[in-house]
Image 1 (cartoon, one colour):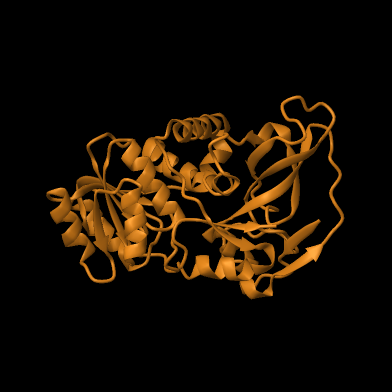
Image 2 (image 1 turned 90 degrees about the horizontal axis):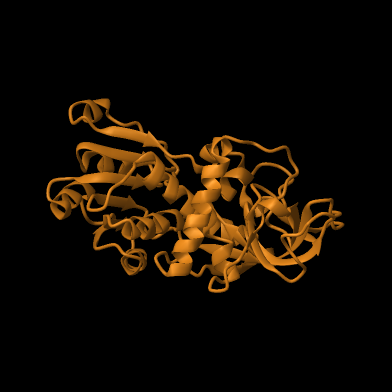
Length: 323
């Protein structure tokens, strides 16, 4: 099989594509021939050694895959050879095949492409945990999504719209803002030319209830200041590359809240709730209530380009490697 190998922490250009023997399939496991592997911002952090979790090297990055079952192990009755499936692997996904426990592999709905199946779990899982479990958002509230044209932000736009929230999409290019509007945003903010705080307050009639922030940097404080009293800033990530230092007086004097959203960490203690969340998302996609974007495809050999495009925030929507 072919894999992307990170042999030492460093720039994504150091990654290599290697041939390795296939891993045997054990009892309760399935072999998946990977047709699409989701590429996420966090994958680039892993490779550079910048994520809070540092796996021992060498390792194969990639946490989301979709494909076809090629082999089933003893005792597996839920899957058959030829089934279309997807799963979250944490690591190991940038490969032509993966072996994974059958109980953690989900059948891909007929109406979902392999590209969509390989790219929706992290983004929609994060948005679902943020808006349903952490913020406990209610229909009619105003939600400002920063980085709304990227995969994580776009999922929040989609989930927020489905929940009945008034969504404002903030992004730096018209292409990114347009795709957010197509997914349910009812207003846009150009972060390259407009003042986020004043524009968000103008659009929402005095301030938004929620800010979804996967960007960090200077936009985090602008988002915090755009909140109304008792508003909530959802800290999702730092795609801008800078962890913000927020003015505590802006939290205190307006009774605002700052809430961390780490979907991966949440899953560790909420396995059953996460399974229900995933089932609810898949059902919503089947109903047509949620609309994961079709990703941009890169060849496995172009993994460095795919990851650098993520790190440089060039990707509109999502992207995948196609082995």
